[in-house]
Length: 459
Image (cartoon, rainbow, N blue to C red; front, side, top):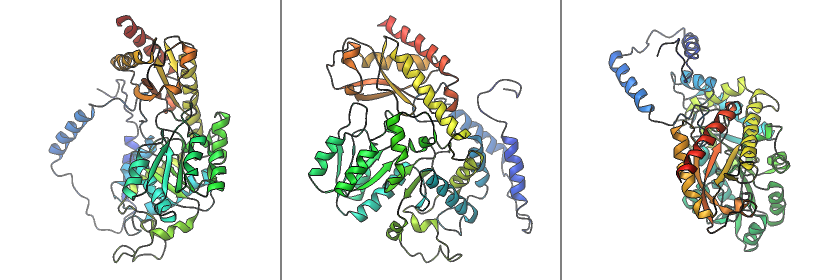
């Protein structure tokens, strides 16, 4: 493919990377020349071409017609900043290994804390949401040893796993018909006693539902448990201006939780390997205290490794996040917030079309940017098969959706005239998290329409 031919992968930024690399090189003028040569350049090129061929065996996560799982490309500035940092390969465990990138991490994390309303905090980046949640629950376990961790049935499965790793009991409580933690079910669990931590999910993986934080805060005052917000997916949505009333109320009080996790490698436009854990009370840092005979000689300042369970971490993740927020600050009404709002508009528009089409039975109105729907059938048990067929048929037409197994209580079966002869259904799911999805919605709907007709004609 020549440069004059159309292409789908962004390449204009390569020249910017070259210029930035030259500028970085000039920052070390007093060192004697020691630039590594690309030994065996032809062999390296052959291997890299093999890598390109192998990577082609993927769904096109970068394209707007990929509207399935929570996958999107990093912003070009994040990609470039990460690549630039890799020429140095800083380690943000200790200042010796990443002086500049450690400072950039502190500044970036402070911006995220400010976004949720915290002027003081303790926090750092992690390798992802799982590790971030592990740290939050580990601290909770230190404060409430042996006490039960509770989350909803729609919370991420990692909480049950993490609790097992930490040796803490775990209980999953029921959800309401909107995929949110059921407050009455939680009360029954709390009345049994022994609950140390409740996890509020702010953007469930399956449907993007937001747990009722206001009611959970009231229960915290009554029962004295620790309240942790898993906002790995939905944490940034407090910046947008088109949320529903219930979700808006949650984000208005998000700063009242005890700890919070957010994943910049989801809506924060970052490469994978970038999560963030934050604690409202910096005093919990005492649980991390340790001594090292070899990593802390260069500075009396607080090292990131002294407030993290992880040791070596990629400083490039902090560099990429810092660069992205320098370009796109976390402010209401700004370009970053507008991108999130665009995805939500796309989700609401898709939900509206599904609701008006008798071939589909959508779940409740999306709270964020995830849309879920069934294929209409006389019985729930007759819907799952066509959903799987539609998933395949849409993919053949270059529209990539996702499948989910969800409770039928999330769907208005009576209103749709569907017999509820089983408890769960295989349904379609679309995550419209790319800002481009709104502009591509007509194309997405046209393909979905054609694919659905093809499946129903064949049945």
